[in-house]
Image (tube, rainbow, N blue to C red):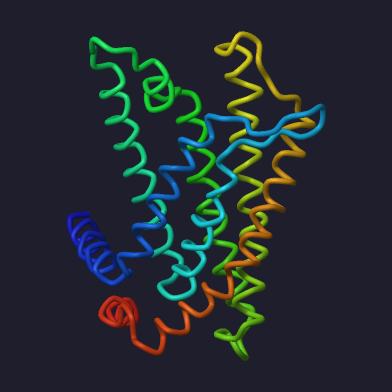
Amino acid sequence: MKKFIRDWWIDTKSLFRAIPSTVTALFVISVVTMNLLANKTIYQNQYVALDGGILVSWLSFLCMDITVKHFGLKAANKLSIFAICVNLLCCLIFYVVSVIPTNYDYSAFNGIFGGTWFILLSSTIAFISSALLNNFLNFIIGLSFKKNPDGKLAFFTRTYVSTFVGQFFDNLVFSLLTFMLFAPIFWDGFSWTFVQCLTCSLIGASLELFMEVVFSPFGYWVCKKWKQENVGEAYLSRKEAL
C-alpha cells in the first residue's frame, strides 16, 4: 500500500510538472467560473432553459481532450480531480468572505460568491462524472484509429463525440439535481420540468459542441506542437517504462 501511494504521488508530481501551466490554469479557471455562472438562468421558456455555465464549459472539455490525447487517460482524470478540488477550495474561500460581517451592504456580492450549497453539490457531481466519461470515451475512440492515431480525423472524431456525450451528461445530471430535486424545495417552488432539463441538456451540448468545433483546430495544433517539441517527455517516458 505504501509503495502504491508513493508511486502515485511521484507519478502525479511528474504529471503536473509536465502539463503546460497555461492548460492547467485555463482548465481550473473554466471550472471555477462555470460553477459561478451556473447560478444564473440566462434563458427559459416552456421547453428550453439554459444557465450561464454553458458559455465556458466547452473550454473545460477542450482542455481535457488535448490532455487525454497527449498525456493519456489517467493524466486527464487526475487533472479533472485537481480542478474540482481547487473549485471546492475557492468556494470555501468565497463562502468565508461572504459571511464576514461588515458595515456596508454586500448582499448582492454575498449572494453570488456565497454560493448555494446544492448548486455546488450538483455541479461537482455532474462535472466529475461527465469528465471521467468524456476522458474515457476520448481515449477509447482514439484507440480505434490504429493506422493514423495522430491525424485530424482521429482527433476531431474523438473530440466531438466525447464532448457531446460528456456535455449532455454533465448538463442533464446538473439540471436534474438542481432544478428538479433541490430548487423546488429551497427556491420557493422554482423548478424546471423534465422536458426543460432534457432540452437544456441537448441544446447546451449542441452549443458547446459548436464551440468545440470552432476551437478544436487550435486544440489539434496544440497537440501537434506538443509532440514536435516533446512536451512532457520526462512524464511520458516514465509512463512507458512503467
